[in-house]
Each structure stands twice: as structure tokens, then as C-alpha cells.
Image 1 (cartoon, rainbow, N blue to C red):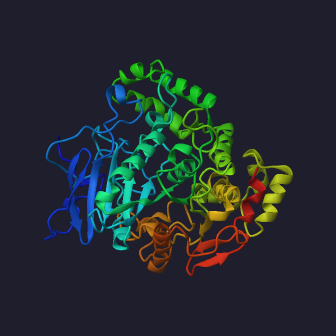
Image 2 (image 1 turned 120 degrees about the vertical axis):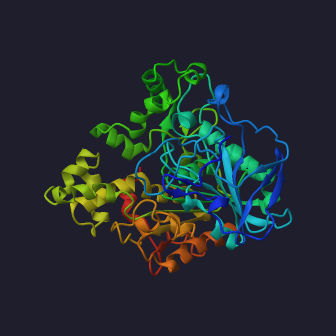
Image 3 (image 1 turned 90 degrees about the horizontal axis):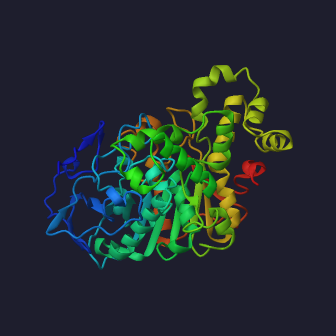
Length: 501
């Protein structure tokens, strides 16, 4: 098999060829399927492209994940493995390259001490991308800073879009979610060999990855696989079985196929990917926009009556996952940037009719405006409303459902290049990778290291101690505000309460 390039689309991968030379012997770890060889980057032993499941190809493309076959000798884990995301997804805030190949269910592991007796806390990170894109090969998802601070980090891939979350008749649904569970089972079996403690696993994610974290938190089969959770900008998909069936049938029809695994698997290369594209983008009509604001992405965990029996927040209200500490937050203006091209026109249009068109009118709109007296101008008001509906309102909904072991946070520091505390801005601060490729495009040429110390340091303490270094939600709805300087706020997220139902 051809070796993966060290740079894809101008994005340097986490790869032995991009790492400084080391005089230490390459780290080798033994797992069930065989041995894997990584490489050192300073004090961080790095293993990339380690398969946790068999390639989801052929008859297995729409099946539940299966163990990877064993291999002889020592498997190379020094260059990125193939990603479920394929092709160029255009300009994105996070550089997430697509790596070619078919063995796409992989993990990357970063550890300061790859020895079985190290007993270090573990962070498992789930990338975002509206459940339809994203790549663990991003240089922003580099666990070296966590390794520096005594944490073993595992980043995981999972099937996305139709392959992961599309309804396929006669096949197991929620395949992307099943991949995540399978990866967490892999962590339980193998992380000790990389220096991690399987009894101290924290799952984390951003955007759809945070939505997956909340889903897993309320999922009974996941309860023995992790012990704490951290979410950033949670994007919860609320998709019923009937809606998922209709979407699956529409995509199969667009591909010229029956909606069954055998027929879909027989399609030519790229046919299904092309057919699903308009559905990933979503309905741009007013009705489609309202649906997205109310229910989230079109792909995502489906209430299938099998693996997922109820919406995530309903599961949390029943007490599922209540024993697990949770830190959860969002940014102040995640999606206001989408209105920047229309700034001139929006100066002349009042916000009330725009909000009414988007589904917010009458007494509910008046209550929302009273709760946000500092917002001025239609761009800011409408952008904040979209942000609140898609991300911020999820924080108090989840925290109110389980207040005793929940810590809330807000990221309020505005991007010096984009002007907003926008979606994805917190990720390089969380991983403490301010110098990574593309980070300065939204964090500026001189991003505040003290803010990275605060965000990343708080995450390290949470992963190590399963408690955040500020008061929990139960103490006056307190949240830590990540800004320069940071501060604590009581009555946090009060401005989104008129949107809660």
C-alpha cells in the first residue's frame, strides 16, 4: 500500500516525517491484534493510524464494527491512517484533511509513558463536523500538550454522513455511534499498554463531537466505558426514526439504488457520496432553516428504538449517567460570522421580522429580547439567536437535567481576526496548540497563552481529578467564563432561558 503523504492539502499531518529527530528507540506497544511501533516527539510517544476495528468495506460497509484481524510482526504507526472523510470539503475553520484509504476506523494515541504500570488519566476526543465531516488527522487534535501534562490522549475516527448515520433498511442503525462505543471498548482493553488507566477515562468533543459526548452520557451501553465527560459547543441532533427513514430513502433514490446494504454497497465509487451532498447541506428554504435551528443537523444519532431509545436530554433526566462528572460550555457568538457578508444590508432591517421568519415571535421573542438587552443591531441579534438555538441553549438544558455533578463554562474571548467568540475558536486553546497550522487565522498572530493555560489547564485538572477548578452548576448556576482575564459568573446562560422548552 502506498505511504500516505506527510502533508495533505497544505496541512502538515502528525507524522514521524514531520517530527524532530529523536535518539530514543521507537516505542513499541503490544495490543490484541499485534504490536505497533510509534515515534517520539520530545517527551510524547505518538502512535497514529492504529486500527481499532476492521475496515468498513464491502459487506461490512453498513454493518456494526468488527475487530480488526491480527497481523504478524510490528505494525507501523508513524503516519496517519485513512479517514472516513474523503475529498476536499472546502474552507473550514479547523484544518481537517482527508486521508485516502479504506481502513478508516483508527485511533491516534499520545502518551508520555507507554508502559503498563504508568496508570495515567486518559482523555478520549471525538471530533466534530455536523456528523457528516471532520477528521482526526487535524494538527489541532494533537495530544502532545496533554502528554506533557501527564494525560494519555486518544483521538478516534468514526463513520460519518450516510455511512455512519443514514437509515439503511435491514442494517444496524447509528453505525457511527456504534463505532464510538467500539473505540471506547478498545480503549478499555488496550490503554493500559500505552500508560493509561482504564478506570479514569474522560470523553470529550466539540460541536457534533460534544453532541456525541452528551448522547453517550445518556446511553446505557456506554456507562462502563468512561467515567467523566467534557463538551464544547454541543450540537445535539434530534432525529426520529420516521424522519431518518425518509432521509435514507431519499438519498438511496438519488443514488439510483434500493435502500438496502447489498444494493448500496454495489454502487460505483463516489456515487453515494455525490448523492448525499445536497442532503448534508440541508434544505436552504425557510422551513429548512427553522428545522435546523430547532432540531440540529440532519445526520446524527437516531432514536432507533434499539441502541438509542430516547432523546439524550430525556435520558439524562431519568438519571442515566448522573454519576459521571460533566463539564459543558459554548462560545458567545458561534455562528454570528455567517451573517458578516450581509452586515451592510442588515443595518437597515429590524431584527423582529427576521426572528419571526426564523420561528421566534410574540411573547417568546419579547422575553428573549428582554433577556439580551446588550444586543444591538440585527446582525448581532439574529447571529446570537442562531448561536443560542444551535449550541448555547443545550448547556442549561443539560445542566438543569443533572445539576449536581455538572460544571458549566463560557468562552467569551473574541477572535482578533473575525471579531467574534466564534465556533471552533476554543479548540486550539483546549489542546494548547496555538502555533498549529491554521490556528492563527482565527486566534490572531499573538494569541494569549494565558488563556490557553486556563482552558487547557482546567481540562487537565478535570481529566485528572474529575472535578473542574470552579463552582458547579448547582451553586447558583455558576459558569467559568474563559476570557482575558477569566472570571466566574452566577446565573450563567440566563439569556437563553426564553428559548428553553
